[in-house]
Image (tube, rainbow, N blue to C red):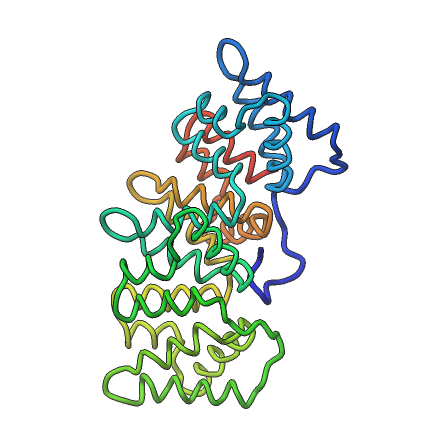
Length: 326
């Protein structure tokens, strides 16, 4: 699930249990049933199983549970759990394409728009994931993701999101120095070198070029014009489009530090952005959460686990820490 060009030796925190045959699946389904049967619920037993299985293995458990007991596992979990523990458990039990689709739908439904969620999901995933999420979205809501975005976001930011929704980014990791130079010049002409900004040039280059190409564009731009590319974005844009373009630059430059920052932001200040915290931990746990943990501690001089300990409570805290340390 890592972005194209991400180091191949990434470090997940949640790995599939191995070996894991039909008997193991049945044992897990039976154990979960026992944890929810009778008076009270054994949350520790539920956490011990679900925090230590891959998303695919959780789907196998859910199917076996239904075949054994004629009941939906997620519905049973919802009836037995509550609050934020329920939220993180349900997130873990949802296939990732549908989970991301639900998160995007939540971000653009109701009053206001959660622009940070839209940016995080659409900027950080590869083409295959974007197309899978779009299919899941249409299956769940009988509308296309693009149509809902068009209804909710307008102007430069809306066009940025629609471009990202196409899942058409170049995933070739080879660099072409001539093309890099052309893009550096085009971005300079579209921004610093004129009055006003040609937003379409920034949109076209940042939404379609490969990760390795853009990293070199950012490096060459600073070397040629003496300005970090993030500062160019800040000088040329404001509001949501500035936030979106800066997120692309951060993700392309270093996906790990971007997500470390997202986790920190979810737990800093008054209150906790639990939905953001859950989404990042659950979605990155089988990909690169181990790398994100290292970057987090380097950036904030405190471990991710310690932040969660201080910011969350109860079995919800235990489940998050189990996913982070699994």
